Image 1 (cartoon, rainbow, N blue to C red):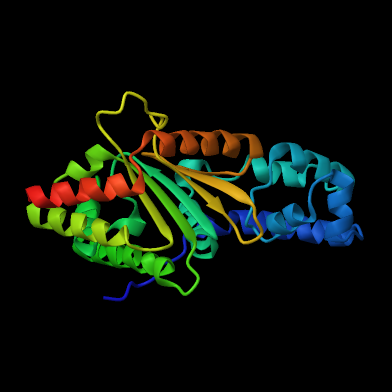
Image 2 (cartoon, rainbow, N blue to C red):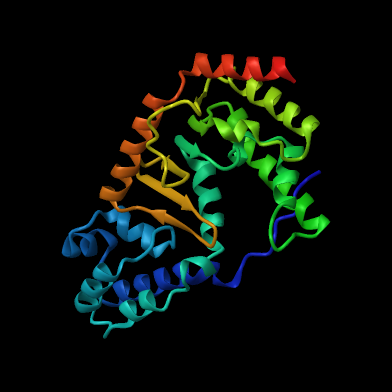
Length: 275
């Protein structure tokens, strides 16, 4: 089943609108992106990304830009009045755009398997647990779209992908025994993909660097390092270099604490043998 693309949320354009305002003000002041970047002491790519709506304009940078471009607080007011994170369905859209283009992805999961590893039946079972509930058509559409994202793993030049998953996720019998067995078999097949490293953090581990929850690390084609955090009531990008570094160090520790890819494959074989 091919997924029908859901309508774009109205507030998806908020960052792009703010970016257009910056672009208009910059041109009115007679600056190129490069010249403005030099004035505010950031990379030219940062200015370009903000103008294209791909990167959030931070309050401190907005204040500096207002002063240089003489926009009388317009950019600062725009930043201050962007919708709250939990009203920002745009983050999921932006994540999927970056995911499609990424050259490297590192994902830690401790509640449910990441979408890139889910079978269709498992994805539908997960979506049916949503509160408030999706209707049947929404479940089917969203599950199909989730499976479609997995195309990046089959490309001629796929990204380098690493997963660390807490072992209890493997024992989640969501959807019933048949769905669980099919999902385990799919994971076992995924361990053979040359672009992927799949590791499980065992329940018996006395150390756990991921107790604060799941996250994704992503490297863009221009080698920008980003992180994505998804919670109960909202999701957010992390682009601050210090914060991304902290998450990268957590991920490195998780990989050290987890079973090796070969040991993780053996764990799947044992679980499948018990089915």
